[in-house]
Image (cartoon, rainbow, N blue to C red; front, side, top):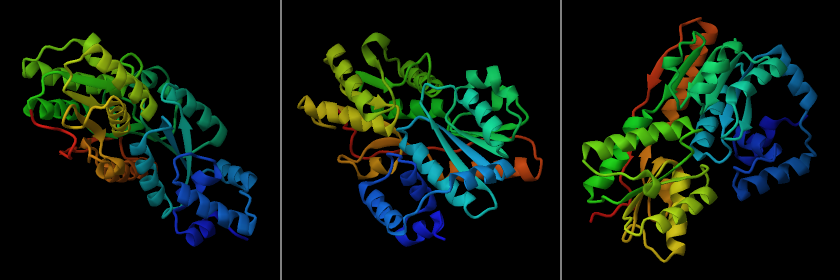
Length: 335
């Protein structure tokens, strides 16, 4: 009987990549999708969902709850987490929700339906945790956001300091002579990550004595190529003097650059752009993106190890901050 691991071995791709193809996920390259689908057809493979569900009710399952469907950093972290879990007795299940959904409500439902041993939250709004996380009884780790102030005994966290990292990004633009700086990010009302990064931007403007007008300098968008494309056009229409843009994700940065090029503007000669995350796209994009590089392997590694400590050793929840790195790239020009 052919298994998903057999398909992974023959295709040359990981089990998690095969799983994403079988679940019709879009975050798989066309080449990988075609290769895996050829092997699936060759063996007439059909996933045994009944057996999978039965295994989950016995519960050696860890659920990875991912907030947002277009986050390349989260895709990298999920891949790394699954690679680690494949070497253990645990089965991983990935659940994707929209970036505006309530992740804690989803977790409560998942706990009721699947009865997992533990949860890994990729992205999250602390307000949602304050209101309802008490109903989640299993050991959990909040990844990329801090849960330290929440005070739950079964909730640990591993994150990057979003405030310091965004401050570093704006500092870098200012060091290169930019004073008319635009920002593209998520909703400041709904996105905790966007609020933290916005706070970091404000700290940099304040210490460098730069005036900031939010109506002219901030454009809200979904964390997507399309959203950032529209937001960049909005910024250009609002501020003709703009010389630089900080995008709160690399995906947003690429969407912004496409909008600039469609308006016959060159990056970085006319307008500089810096992103956030440090995904592979940033390294291979043209121009190579300046970005705040999160250490996704460390984020994944520490999250899994901390969850194991909670599950297997009964250790108390801990809260760790993983250092970030400024990657200067080629998309910021000194003026």
